[in-house]
Length: 507
Image (cartoon, rainbow, N blue to C red; front, side):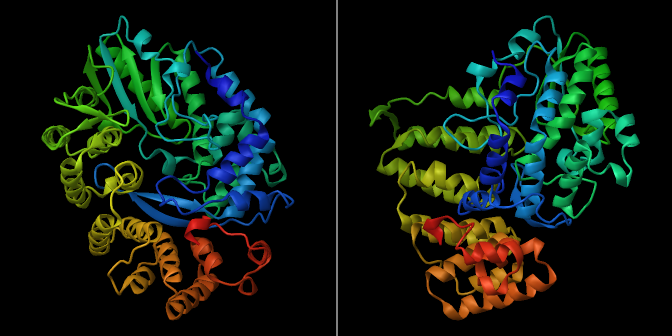
């Protein structure tokens, strides 16, 4: 099985920069109409650093599986490029850091991290797992264990203290001895500085969304792993979630205490509400995953190499998934998993009709599922655009009523992608009233597609106001709506040269 450092060593400094800037600026939770590939090419014509002033960032929210919004961010692109360039310039030192902190590990503790993905330019994907290369260490470390201790970090990314990056890289004492203004060019201080600059110069928190934040968190958390491993604890970590196998209840308590103490060194804290000790044996995967995977679809047949299911079996499966979800405190990730299973099935006409009506119903109850509809429902099942339109209309109305602007954005996104009208006369004004950058951007593209010139002027007037008062928080919308003559500095140059952050099929 491959070691943690092997994944880091196969990434070059150029790979790192290209992956972060070209494919890690916009998080996966945003409707997929944005790209930073052209921007990546433009940055390679510039001299770094590109304007070192602290920048603000675009805010947006994405619904979690428990129907609670998660605040996310899109950084100002030049500040983000500075950070990525700084990380790339110091990539050898960072590789040495990762090597030093993981060299003695007998298995790969950190399971989700930056790596080269197969046949893809990105360096990170949430929940990415490759058991054939990473192995399954839990099978070995569970032996002789009687309990499992589960823990996670309380609000991990928002709690990261930027100075703790230097503490992890060179030691707290040495880092503090190099904290004078004359030491600002030290490589570890530069990483700290450029990370802070993504968040208006603030020391508390890294942005949720850009892929660089996952690398920053790993710098700190592998250092915590190193200390815990020295103490003999056997565990795996999925970003900020810990699963530790122990022989006694007392050892589990000791793990919580040690983890808490090590996190505290970096101004992080254990989430005590989610810490729990469970007697073994325990299923290797969550019980509901096993149950869904082993659901017995009876009386099936094959169409185009896919298992085909009829409406009777489909009803049974969906009802089963809903029951499992309700048993798990309405965790909508169970429905998410069920939808992914069905995306690989063939549905006959009656089954498809039933399925899309159920999806229509469920997505209004659990908006967490919205970003799954296009890739796992509409596309694999070839859903008619008139049906998509009906779903979009209801999702838009729901989102507007609940101020879930992610839902509004997806509804308009589908209207642009599948070329239909949203029968709502207030889209432009709704997006302007929301002051949500993504909602504004996709609404502008929708009205642009429908050649509503008077509306476009209103968007541009808003951009001029935002440009004066709050450029960084709306940089994407301002840049894409205003002509180059209204922009300054590198934004002006980019726009004059026709560079865009919008994918061609949406522009």
